[in-house]
Figure (tube, rainbow, N blue to C red):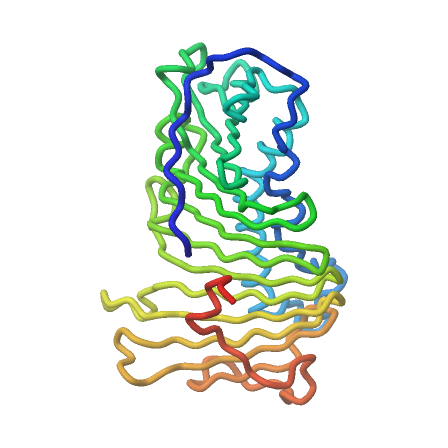
Length: 317
């Protein structure tokens, strides 16, 4: 992942010009960056077993959590930029929206800052300050971002990073810590993104370090890769877990997973699961007999196993 820009909020000075174009429509679009995984209806669950496919549940849970984090950031951006900037300056090509607060109980006010750089890229930041505070002296950046030069509303790339530790210090309602960083690209054909979780988790809970990547075409088919560290057998040594999930727009899918390192040494544990449009297991196999083998791989929508690699977590071509 590329280095993320360290942004400083500039003082709000200069003449207001509400009619100036600041290309706020180039900021990342929530509906283009999130993952549109097919969602199971309750009636789809297997009548005999009453169970969803295990890895479908994992895949859905991870994608929904990532979508929630994306919405936390880009939902704010999308709403704020429907309003007129509070301040703008044509000479320096920057604008500030807000700060605003959601309710009387909100301890912070939130705003958005955007600036066009000399190379045609756009730097942006979400900032917060104590309610009633001074924007020049008390503003703290909680999200930083950069939209690459040449981006358009429909064909764009960029990065953003959320500092949940800082956000939680400003607002007790934010119970997360660590950072969530995203690099994305999207066009008419679909979208791709990679994300990193660093020391991420509940303020008073366990933290994780993980990498996440996905690719999705305009029709709804997609691929999700996930890798994280976890002490699987509770010996104090972390293993590396990696999973690739693939799905069609109908919901049919397959996940393949591997556990390596830690106490396993040179050994590795593999598992694969397929499911149909009903999201019920049609094939399962693993190398340690964790669960009973079910079905045949040839019946899967994707017959061959695929696992993520280091290159899976980079958008570099």
